[in-house]
Amino acid sequence: MDKDAKPLSRKEFLKTSAAGILGICFSSISVKDSNSAGQKKNEERPGLAELGRTGIKVTPLGFGASRTMEQSLVMAALEAGLNFLDTGRSYFRGQNEMMIGRATAGLRKEVVIQSKLDLGLTSQQLNSPAEIKRAVAEMEASLQASLRALQTDYLDIMLIHGAVSPEVIFQEEVRRFFEDAKRKGTIKAHGFSCHTNQVELLRAANKKLFYDVVMLPYNHQGAYVHANTGRPGKWDQVALEEEMDKARQNGLGLIAMKTCSGGQLAAGPGAEPTFEEALRWILRRSKVHTMAVAMANYNQLKEDLQALQ
Image: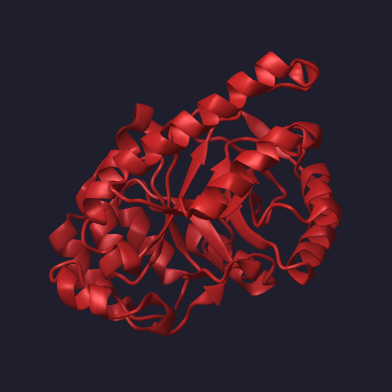
Protein backbone atom coordinates (compact mmCIF):
# COMPACT_ATOMS: atom_id res chain seq x y z
CA MET A 1 0.00 0.00 0.00
CA ASP A 2 1.19 3.52 -0.77
CA LYS A 3 2.23 4.98 2.57
CA ASP A 4 1.36 8.47 1.31
CA ALA A 5 -2.14 7.46 0.25
CA LYS A 6 -4.94 9.38 1.91
CA PRO A 7 -6.65 7.24 4.56
CA LEU A 8 -10.07 6.07 3.37
CA SER A 9 -13.17 6.46 5.49
CA ARG A 10 -15.85 3.77 5.51
CA LYS A 11 -18.07 5.94 3.30
CA GLU A 12 -15.27 6.54 0.80
CA PHE A 13 -14.37 2.86 0.79
CA LEU A 14 -17.91 1.75 0.04
CA LYS A 15 -18.23 4.39 -2.67
CA THR A 16 -14.90 3.86 -4.44
CA SER A 17 -14.18 0.21 -3.76
CA ALA A 18 -17.16 -1.96 -3.04
CA ALA A 19 -19.12 -0.99 -6.13
CA GLY A 20 -16.29 -2.11 -8.38
CA ILE A 21 -15.41 -5.25 -6.48
CA LEU A 22 -18.69 -6.67 -5.18
CA GLY A 23 -19.86 -9.66 -7.16
CA ILE A 24 -16.59 -10.19 -9.00
CA CYS A 25 -15.93 -13.44 -7.14
CA PHE A 26 -18.82 -13.75 -4.72
CA SER A 27 -21.92 -11.99 -3.55
CA SER A 28 -21.94 -9.66 -0.59
CA ILE A 29 -23.47 -10.01 2.85
CA SER A 30 -26.01 -7.39 3.83
CA VAL A 31 -25.21 -6.02 7.26
CA LYS A 32 -28.10 -3.58 7.05
CA ASP A 33 -30.85 -6.18 7.10
CA SER A 34 -29.79 -9.14 9.20
CA ASN A 35 -33.12 -10.91 8.70
CA SER A 36 -32.83 -11.02 4.93
CA ALA A 37 -29.15 -11.89 5.24
CA GLY A 38 -29.97 -14.78 7.50
CA GLN A 39 -32.37 -16.18 4.94
CA LYS A 40 -29.60 -16.35 2.37
CA LYS A 41 -27.70 -19.52 3.15
CA ASN A 42 -23.94 -19.24 3.09
CA GLU A 43 -23.64 -22.44 1.07
CA GLU A 44 -25.59 -20.92 -1.80
CA ARG A 45 -23.22 -18.01 -2.35
CA PRO A 46 -20.94 -18.34 -5.40
CA GLY A 47 -17.15 -18.15 -5.34
CA LEU A 48 -16.69 -20.20 -2.19
CA ALA A 49 -14.19 -23.00 -1.64
CA GLU A 50 -14.73 -26.02 0.57
CA LEU A 51 -12.24 -25.99 3.44
CA GLY A 52 -10.98 -29.52 3.02
CA ARG A 53 -13.19 -32.19 4.54
CA THR A 54 -14.84 -29.81 7.02
CA GLY A 55 -17.84 -29.01 4.84
CA ILE A 56 -17.24 -25.33 5.64
CA LYS A 57 -17.24 -22.99 2.65
CA VAL A 58 -15.02 -19.93 2.65
CA THR A 59 -14.15 -17.01 0.42
CA PRO A 60 -10.61 -17.13 -1.06
CA LEU A 61 -9.73 -13.99 0.89
CA GLY A 62 -10.40 -13.81 4.61
CA PHE A 63 -10.33 -10.94 7.08
CA GLY A 64 -7.63 -11.22 9.73
CA ALA A 65 -8.85 -9.12 12.65
CA SER A 66 -5.74 -9.26 14.82
CA ARG A 67 -4.72 -5.64 14.13
CA THR A 68 -7.98 -3.79 14.45
CA MET A 69 -10.69 -3.02 16.97
CA GLU A 70 -12.78 -1.12 14.42
CA GLN A 71 -16.12 -2.86 14.11
CA SER A 72 -17.10 -0.85 11.04
CA LEU A 73 -14.03 -2.16 9.19
CA VAL A 74 -15.14 -5.74 9.78
CA MET A 75 -18.66 -4.87 8.64
CA ALA A 76 -17.26 -3.27 5.48
CA ALA A 77 -15.35 -6.47 4.74
CA LEU A 78 -18.57 -8.45 5.11
CA GLU A 79 -20.41 -6.05 2.82
CA ALA A 80 -17.60 -6.49 0.29
CA GLY A 81 -18.35 -10.21 0.24
CA LEU A 82 -15.80 -11.77 2.58
CA ASN A 83 -17.24 -14.46 4.83
CA PHE A 84 -14.17 -15.77 6.69
CA LEU A 85 -13.12 -13.96 9.88
CA ASP A 86 -10.03 -14.86 11.88
CA THR A 87 -9.63 -13.80 15.50
CA GLY A 88 -8.06 -15.21 18.67
CA ARG A 89 -8.57 -15.28 22.42
CA SER A 90 -5.29 -13.45 23.02
CA TYR A 91 -5.90 -10.58 20.57
CA PHE A 92 -6.43 -7.35 22.47
CA ARG A 93 -6.82 -9.49 25.62
CA GLY A 94 -10.12 -10.93 24.47
CA GLN A 95 -11.56 -7.63 23.28
CA ASN A 96 -11.03 -8.57 19.63
CA GLU A 97 -13.44 -11.48 19.91
CA MET A 98 -15.99 -9.21 21.55
CA MET A 99 -15.70 -6.77 18.65
CA ILE A 100 -16.19 -9.60 16.13
CA GLY A 101 -19.21 -10.74 18.12
CA ARG A 102 -20.78 -7.30 17.82
CA ALA A 103 -19.94 -7.04 14.11
CA THR A 104 -21.55 -10.39 13.30
CA ALA A 105 -24.63 -10.06 15.49
CA GLY A 106 -27.60 -11.31 13.46
CA LEU A 107 -25.31 -12.70 10.75
CA ARG A 108 -24.03 -15.88 12.40
CA LYS A 109 -25.13 -18.24 9.63
CA GLU A 110 -23.59 -15.99 7.00
CA VAL A 111 -20.07 -15.90 8.40
CA VAL A 112 -17.33 -18.37 9.20
CA ILE A 113 -15.63 -17.51 12.48
CA GLN A 114 -12.25 -18.93 13.37
CA SER A 115 -10.66 -18.33 16.74
CA LYS A 116 -7.60 -19.62 18.54
CA LEU A 117 -6.71 -20.70 22.05
CA ASP A 118 -3.38 -21.21 23.77
CA LEU A 119 -2.19 -24.68 24.69
CA GLY A 120 -0.13 -24.09 27.81
CA LEU A 121 1.76 -27.35 27.60
CA THR A 122 5.39 -28.05 26.72
CA SER A 123 7.19 -31.22 25.68
CA GLN A 124 8.84 -31.30 29.09
CA GLN A 125 5.42 -31.40 30.80
CA LEU A 126 4.04 -34.37 28.87
CA ASN A 127 5.04 -36.78 31.64
CA SER A 128 3.08 -34.82 34.24
CA PRO A 129 -0.62 -35.80 34.50
CA ALA A 130 -1.21 -32.72 36.66
CA GLU A 131 0.19 -30.36 34.03
CA ILE A 132 -1.82 -32.03 31.29
CA LYS A 133 -5.00 -31.77 33.35
CA ARG A 134 -4.30 -28.09 34.02
CA ALA A 135 -3.64 -27.35 30.34
CA VAL A 136 -6.84 -29.05 29.18
CA ALA A 137 -8.89 -27.23 31.83
CA GLU A 138 -7.44 -23.94 30.61
CA MET A 139 -8.35 -24.85 27.03
CA GLU A 140 -11.95 -25.52 28.07
CA ALA A 141 -12.13 -22.22 29.96
CA SER A 142 -10.69 -20.40 26.94
CA LEU A 143 -13.22 -22.02 24.60
CA GLN A 144 -16.12 -20.99 26.82
CA ALA A 145 -14.75 -17.45 27.08
CA SER A 146 -14.52 -17.25 23.28
CA LEU A 147 -18.11 -18.40 22.86
CA ARG A 148 -19.32 -15.74 25.29
CA ALA A 149 -17.24 -13.00 23.70
CA LEU A 150 -18.33 -13.90 20.19
CA GLN A 151 -22.00 -14.14 21.23
CA THR A 152 -22.40 -17.59 19.72
CA ASP A 153 -23.01 -21.13 20.88
CA TYR A 154 -20.55 -22.65 18.40
CA LEU A 155 -17.34 -21.85 16.56
CA ASP A 156 -16.81 -22.88 12.98
CA ILE A 157 -13.09 -23.41 13.55
CA MET A 158 -11.00 -23.47 16.72
CA LEU A 159 -7.23 -23.66 16.43
CA ILE A 160 -4.39 -24.23 18.85
CA HIS A 161 -2.52 -20.93 18.69
CA GLY A 162 1.14 -21.12 17.68
CA ALA A 163 1.82 -24.86 17.75
CA VAL A 164 5.50 -25.78 18.02
CA SER A 165 5.81 -29.49 18.78
CA PRO A 166 3.87 -32.35 17.14
CA GLU A 167 4.08 -34.48 20.28
CA VAL A 168 2.31 -31.78 22.29
CA ILE A 169 -0.61 -31.09 19.95
CA PHE A 170 -1.21 -34.82 19.41
CA GLN A 171 -1.17 -35.64 23.13
CA GLU A 172 -4.10 -37.93 24.00
CA GLU A 173 -5.94 -35.59 26.38
CA VAL A 174 -5.52 -32.66 24.00
CA ARG A 175 -7.10 -34.71 21.24
CA ARG A 176 -9.91 -35.79 23.54
CA PHE A 177 -10.65 -32.15 24.35
CA PHE A 178 -11.31 -31.43 20.67
CA GLU A 179 -13.25 -34.65 20.14
CA ASP A 180 -15.52 -33.78 23.07
CA ALA A 181 -16.04 -30.20 21.85
CA LYS A 182 -17.01 -31.43 18.40
CA ARG A 183 -19.36 -34.03 19.86
CA LYS A 184 -21.05 -31.33 21.95
CA GLY A 185 -21.35 -29.08 18.88
CA THR A 186 -19.36 -26.19 20.34
CA ILE A 187 -16.89 -26.40 17.46
CA LYS A 188 -17.34 -27.67 13.92
CA ALA A 189 -13.69 -28.05 12.95
CA HIS A 190 -10.42 -28.06 14.86
CA GLY A 191 -6.79 -27.52 14.00
CA PHE A 192 -3.68 -25.53 14.77
CA SER A 193 -1.73 -22.51 13.61
CA CYS A 194 2.06 -22.36 13.54
CA HIS A 195 4.68 -19.67 13.06
CA THR A 196 7.70 -21.98 13.00
CA ASN A 197 8.45 -25.64 12.27
CA GLN A 198 5.58 -25.69 9.80
CA VAL A 199 6.98 -28.41 7.53
CA GLU A 200 7.37 -30.89 10.42
CA LEU A 201 3.99 -29.97 11.90
CA LEU A 202 2.15 -30.31 8.59
CA ARG A 203 3.94 -33.59 7.91
CA ALA A 204 2.72 -34.87 11.26
CA ALA A 205 -0.82 -33.69 10.47
CA ASN A 206 -0.67 -35.60 7.20
CA LYS A 207 0.40 -38.77 9.00
CA LYS A 208 -2.03 -38.58 11.91
CA LEU A 209 -5.03 -37.15 10.01
CA PHE A 210 -6.57 -35.94 13.26
CA TYR A 211 -6.76 -32.18 12.76
CA ASP A 212 -9.13 -30.70 10.19
CA VAL A 213 -7.45 -27.34 9.55
CA VAL A 214 -3.91 -25.99 9.53
CA MET A 215 -3.08 -22.27 9.33
CA LEU A 216 0.52 -21.60 8.40
CA PRO A 217 2.81 -18.88 7.01
CA TYR A 218 2.91 -18.89 3.21
CA ASN A 219 4.01 -16.22 0.74
CA HIS A 220 6.17 -15.67 -2.33
CA GLN A 221 9.35 -15.10 -0.32
CA GLY A 222 9.26 -18.24 1.78
CA ALA A 223 10.00 -15.96 4.71
CA TYR A 224 8.47 -13.19 6.76
CA VAL A 225 9.20 -10.47 9.25
CA HIS A 226 6.46 -10.04 11.85
CA ALA A 227 4.98 -6.57 11.43
CA ASN A 228 4.57 -5.94 15.16
CA THR A 229 7.47 -7.74 16.81
CA GLY A 230 10.03 -7.76 13.99
CA ARG A 231 10.48 -11.50 14.55
CA PRO A 232 11.81 -13.20 11.39
CA GLY A 233 10.75 -16.58 10.07
CA LYS A 234 11.57 -18.68 7.02
CA TRP A 235 10.92 -22.14 5.63
CA ASP A 236 11.82 -24.58 2.87
CA GLN A 237 9.25 -23.59 0.25
CA VAL A 238 9.65 -26.75 -1.83
CA ALA A 239 9.27 -29.06 1.17
CA LEU A 240 6.32 -27.07 2.49
CA GLU A 241 4.47 -27.11 -0.82
CA GLU A 242 4.97 -30.87 -1.08
CA GLU A 243 3.29 -31.31 2.29
CA MET A 244 0.58 -28.80 1.34
CA ASP A 245 -0.24 -30.86 -1.75
CA LYS A 246 -0.46 -33.99 0.40
CA ALA A 247 -2.64 -32.16 2.90
CA ARG A 248 -5.13 -31.15 0.25
CA GLN A 249 -5.23 -34.73 -1.04
CA ASN A 250 -5.88 -35.86 2.54
CA GLY A 251 -8.77 -33.45 2.93
CA LEU A 252 -7.10 -31.02 5.31
CA GLY A 253 -8.20 -27.40 5.15
CA LEU A 254 -5.27 -25.04 4.59
CA ILE A 255 -5.24 -21.37 5.51
CA ALA A 256 -2.36 -19.04 4.67
CA MET A 257 -1.15 -16.34 7.03
CA LYS A 258 1.82 -13.93 6.91
CA THR A 259 0.71 -13.43 3.31
CA CYS A 260 1.94 -9.84 3.08
CA SER A 261 4.80 -10.18 5.56
CA GLY A 262 7.07 -11.35 2.75
CA GLY A 263 6.82 -7.93 1.15
CA GLN A 264 5.30 -6.59 -2.03
CA LEU A 265 5.58 -8.33 -5.40
CA ALA A 266 5.74 -6.95 -8.94
CA ALA A 267 3.48 -8.44 -11.62
CA GLY A 268 6.32 -8.29 -14.14
CA PRO A 269 9.39 -6.37 -15.30
CA GLY A 270 8.93 -2.65 -14.77
CA ALA A 271 5.73 -3.11 -12.78
CA GLU A 272 5.32 -1.50 -9.39
CA PRO A 273 5.42 -3.99 -6.52
CA THR A 274 2.16 -4.24 -4.57
CA PHE A 275 0.67 -6.30 -1.79
CA GLU A 276 -2.28 -7.20 -3.98
CA GLU A 277 0.12 -8.93 -6.39
CA ALA A 278 1.64 -10.79 -3.45
CA LEU A 279 -1.84 -12.09 -2.66
CA ARG A 280 -2.45 -12.97 -6.31
CA TRP A 281 0.70 -15.11 -6.22
CA ILE A 282 -0.88 -17.17 -3.45
CA LEU A 283 -4.19 -17.43 -5.29
CA ARG A 284 -2.45 -18.60 -8.46
CA ARG A 285 -0.51 -21.32 -6.62
CA SER A 286 -3.78 -22.95 -5.45
CA LYS A 287 -2.12 -24.47 -2.39
CA VAL A 288 -4.49 -23.05 0.23
CA HIS A 289 -8.26 -22.74 0.50
CA THR A 290 -8.27 -19.23 1.94
CA MET A 291 -6.03 -16.59 3.50
CA ALA A 292 -6.28 -14.83 6.84
CA VAL A 293 -4.93 -11.43 5.77
CA ALA A 294 -4.47 -8.95 8.61
CA MET A 295 -6.17 -5.66 7.75
CA ALA A 296 -5.99 -2.55 9.92
CA ASN A 297 -7.71 0.10 7.78
CA TYR A 298 -9.87 0.70 4.72
CA ASN A 299 -6.88 1.30 2.45
CA GLN A 300 -5.58 -2.18 3.21
CA LEU A 301 -9.02 -3.71 2.78
CA LYS A 302 -9.39 -2.01 -0.60
CA GLU A 303 -5.98 -3.17 -1.81
CA ASP A 304 -6.48 -6.72 -0.63
CA LEU A 305 -9.87 -6.95 -2.32
CA GLN A 306 -8.28 -5.85 -5.59
CA ALA A 307 -6.27 -9.08 -5.56
CA LEU A 308 -9.53 -10.84 -6.45
CA GLN A 309 -10.01 -8.90 -9.67
